[in-house]
Length: 123
Length: 110
Image 1 (cartoon, rainbow over the protein chains, first blue to last red):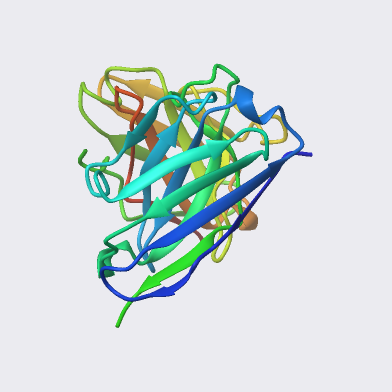
Image 2: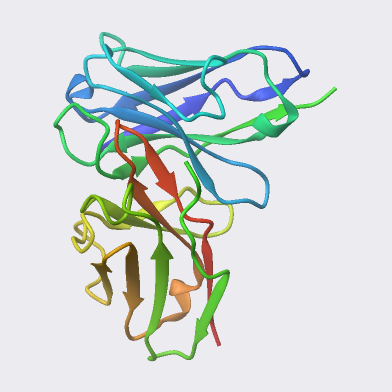
């Protein structure tokens, strides 16, 4: 069974940094592109960032470009999101999600999601 | 990267059908056959219900179906059941390996 487990969320002050992790199991991790999707309290889903299976290509929503960095360690089956210069509007539950096809590129849909980790940006 | 447009809510009685629309542009919904739909119950992670416009993952009932015409995609739930009450989000590939979601639709079973 494929499982994704996020960790690393918490309370951080505006301007601060946080690193999220997503541990994957039950799949050939390097074959699949991965994404981070967030959901602000009471709001809808927002795609944040994606990464190719090899980790060599990364993609970002305009709202986080230049502040967030996605990367992965395929030897540890783990996806990461480094979040810097955090703002109040980054407060959300952050989900990692697996691409449905093993093309290695984030270009279709997300068939497996983690349980999410809450990030709160507040002073 | 503007959000796709969905109705805020739809409702129906058990056994009836409901359809949720998802309107985008030629740069997302209209430009690719990579529209997906997600069901989300309160406090839970989203669940993939439809991908590639009209494909159902294993385990998703055939009461759920998807379609697309031009810049608008649709999700139809037939034979509405109590457990179908949830939020539903559409999502489209938007080119350059980016995605855009809809604002979400709350489905209420009367």
